[in-house]
Image (cartoon, rainbow, N blue to C red):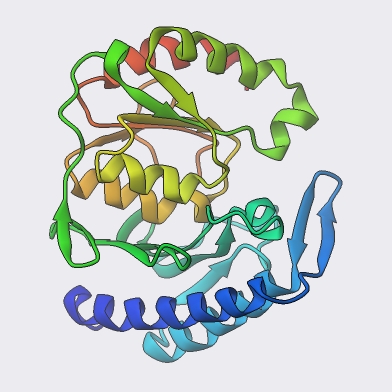
Length: 267
């Protein structure tokens, strides 16, 4: 396999090219389809995934590619080296032409991300990281915030479709509690960008249930390489195939877990 240092340069170019395609779609009609009872996708999701898949396959032929639009819920967790690809994280925002969506790409070794990219083509913000080499935004190294008190923290979450399916109160109770004890909770609708914002210190913490592996793999690596902490709701080590995540600047992590752990029995 090529070195991560060489790979990341080429992956950034591929992701930027896919982002240009998404920008071109924003100025035209966006065709929307239902994927499941509570989920939607667009032709742009599939086309963007095709662009990424074709080019990543050429870049690293030995790595399989697991993409959102092609993944089966019954699929076994891949082994070895593979890509996790989300062509549009924040599809509903994209449909409404809100500039909060991203392409998320991660290179995995078993359950561990070793390279990650999150790109918002509207703002041109390219977040990226390789294992052990730090996290970056448009070429400048980023770090998590230094906030130590949850009372002064700005947090982020969202309510994925499963919250509606399984009962909105499962998500809302925790949202309400943490809204009351922090400076506020933002819910913009893209976990990949939420995690990137934790990595660069704009958010101090983030949590969410029912996410998919391609939603969190790249963002997880960004947070870790920026000096943050990522676990599940109970505080145990996280990997992208778990169904709940908590990420923070490390300093407020135990306080966040004291709230999220109370909701494990509802998931």
